[in-house]
Length: 138
Length: 303
Image (cartoon, rainbow over all chains, first blue to last red; front, top):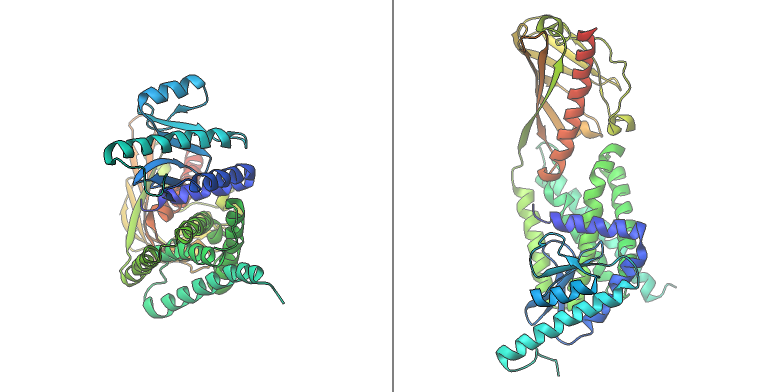
């Protein structure tokens, strides 16, 4: 169904506006912080939500109900799971994807930490393959 | 004198709505002239997205928070709905049905717009707008035809000869409506009369607000099959103008144990698109019409 995920995501946004507008402000803060990093671009995720990219690769995406999805390798996923704040991805449970539920304002900091980890990982991979950091990153 | 921010804010409400109403007016007067009044996919999807994008363009320098952008989009949607009520003469129930779609896509458009204008990539932005307008034009010039059938079954604890007596015609339904749209005022079936028990006989289905559907019996196979074509149906600003019921059918199957399986079928044609959204409503409404009538037939037959 074309645009159906975006329709659903926008309705989640509307629901969040009614039930917990503080979380939407929190998502704005995350967006502002992540976009301040070098080499970051953002767009709409194909299944609805905001997607952050770095050097052509996805860092992660946030659905409008406050679910942050990030792909790590299994080793990092295991370590994060032991911290006890992340969950398996809400659909791809057996993959390296993790989901973090942003339920209160304070969760924003941890969400930024996770995105930063993914960002640095992509940068280090980029450096290994090309010998340089992503454009604009010193 | 209003400052620039206020002016931009105001234009973000004004211009998208003027654009929407002008575009729909042009489409209705030029493209669908002489044809059935069809509301196409683009009017419920592309125009709302463009409303959101145009608003986001006017608001691009205001640094609106996501919550404020969503809230402003809601204001815009209320204007859209108000304009639809005034200019398109849509009924309240229609507007309730269409609202989730409009809310979703105006907000989607506003956030697409925000992403577009933050990137400030003129080529990409022009491509997105051109693509949306291209889809709109192609959709406006395309033929739209969608028909479907809904089927429901009820087990009646009575033999077919008892059930059949209540199928062709039945007295007024006294039970209260349980379906929320009927309770909101959407017309529901109340009574059916028939001129005779033969093919070609006239049949009337009378609805709660006095609407009468004129029908003609197409198949009269006693104790088994009553099929009727709808030959005349009311035109109304509410749902009736966006769907045509083409044919109805009651099938009886003797279960051999004193019970009868009663099947109700209805064929309809939609004049609103996208089908993936409106057909959910059409099926739900048709199903509730079926169930109201069939439950009544069941009660009459079992008592």
